[in-house]
Structure formats: C-alpha cells, structure tokens
Image 1 (tube, rainbow, N blue to C red):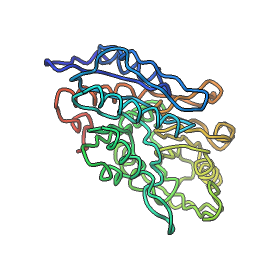
Image 2 (image 1 turned 45 degrees about the vertical axis):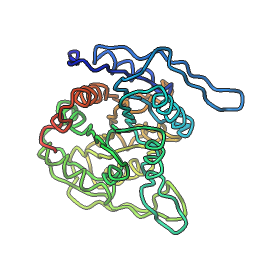
Image 3 (image 1 turned 90 degrees about the vertical axis):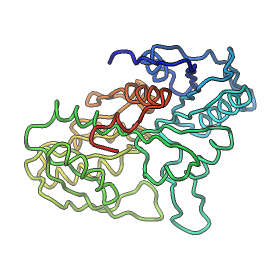
Length: 325
C-alpha cells in the first residue's frame, strides 16, 4: 500500500503505548509520519509513568495501544497517555484500540455482574478521549456505550480476499462455530458466494472455556470448511468445532479470525490434526513462541492507517468498507 497523504493545516500526532510498537510503527510509515517520542516505564510498585517528549498542544492525537495480556496494565498505560494529552492541550484525542479490552463482557449474564465493556468506554471518556477506533468489536452494541463517535472497522474484507485467493477451491463452506456468530458467518458466505453451516455447541455454564457437545447443521462432507470468528482465545471452541467438522466428513478445515489472543493452550490445539490452516491479523502482538507452521498473520495496519487518515481529514470512514455502511 502506498503512503497516505494527509492534507490541510491541522497537525497529526501519532502516539503509541508499549504493547505493540511494531504495529504503531507500520501505521506511522503508511501515514508518512513518525510516532511522537514518548517516555514510558513502570515503577517498582507496578505503577506506570508516561511523558511526551515534544509539544502536543493543538494536535489531532491518535493513541495506539494493543491489549494483550496483561490487559489491565496496557489499558492503564493508554488511559494515562490520554490524560497526559488532555492536560497538554491536545485539540482532539482518538483512542485506537484494535482489540477492544473487555469486549466479551458486554452484558450481564447473571445478577451482581459488571458490564465491563461499558466501564471501559466510560474510562476512556473520563480520561479525555473524544473518539474511538476499533476493529471487529465482539458485539456492535459496544459502539453505543461511548458518548462520542466510534469507528468500527472490519477486517473481514481483507481476510476473505486472502481466503479466496489461497483456499477457495470452488468447494468451500463457511461455518459458524456457534449460534452467536451466525450473522458474521452469513456475511462471509455472501462475500465468498458459499453455503453456510453451523456448529451448535453446548457449554457447562459453571465451567468457563469448556465445550461439552457439538452438532453440525449443514452439509460439510467432502468440502473445505472455513470456520470464522472474531477472536481465538484458548481455541477450545474453534478446535472442538473443527473436530466435529472432520468427524462429519469435512475434507479440510481453515480457521479465520481477526484477534489472535492465543492464551495457552491455543497454539498446541491449533497445531493439531483437526485444523489445517489458521489466518489471523496482528491486532495483537504474536510472539515467535506462539507462531506455528500453519499460521498466517495479515497486517491490520493499512486498514487502521486509512481510518486515521479519514478521521484526520474529516472524511467518511465508512467509505473504506465497500458494500458496508
């Protein structure tokens, strides 16, 4: 992708936390700029210190931070950066959180539980954020939690194009790993012109990350099955679904997801015989020890850079998603 030209007299400032500097550097390169020099370190007590090494007065600031483990540490660092920008008279502050923290806790399942995703947006607002950019939120309703603009980017077009070019043999079926992801899987199916199947799972509500049963709804025998989801954490759901597909006669199983959390034992599970290939993006850093032979990592930087350029130039962000508003 060629560099994105930023026009006008406004001053763009890109700032990065320490969680995923490689992604921030790639975004800066695509935008034809550099990251604002920043000092950040942790005290012996575990508290974090941040300071920007040049003036940010009047800037249109974009604070880029990934949220891998330990999530709370990187969240606080980003909040401190937003607060520092506000106190240094930045004109507008946009939080760039490719993988939104606590996104799975977007509603109450039982009494006396928090709605953690809502609290995250409140914290960003209280710190001084005016806008949020994120990729593939776990549920679209999170956009309504923030009192301000939320640009919800989709990695689906990029992932789907890669799958079409590398795995679509004219015999592909898109598969939702559970009933909750059917809508997204249906969009995948439309884009690829493929039939849709669903893996119905039963969980023990008192045992997290544990799937107890799988049932395949749809014809998968002899077909290349594409399992799609927004994230892979421990890979329990995905691998159990892949095993069910293979048991029902699937020729091969490809997994595509935006966010590669890869908590243990995800890598071991995904490297097994049930999954033939895995395609993810780099919204989260993936260290060498979590990479394996069948893994492909696509860069999300061009998508985020285009969104930042559109926001800075006051253009429509939705125009970077052909076919979607």
